Length: 146
Image (cartoon, rainbow, N blue to C red; front, top):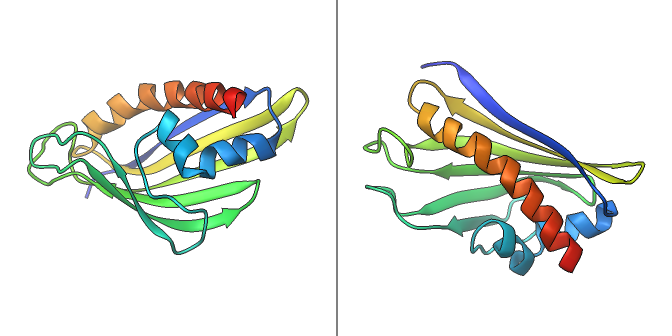
């Protein structure tokens, strides 16, 4: 087994934590900045994100809410991919943690996606590292409209 790595993104968004929380935990809003889903903010709830298939991966990310403390902390598992995909779409068993902290001028959003095992998840890690930064910006745009 290789080393485990995490992607960490932090940004202050100019909105109250409650507004950002709704953007993170309301299925319709979540779809606007990430993917179609059947999310519910309840510990133990199993849900899926759906995107286009890649290689042998069916495009489904299987998740379960592990921790939910509104409007401060949301943690869920993130599992998907296929063993036969050597690059993007490789099998991934990871955890996403989002922490909201009120600060002057808004809320600090901290996202940690942990559990990338190298070398197998290296390509996914590199691709998602830049993607998650853009996603946090999209959370801000959706929160502005919500």
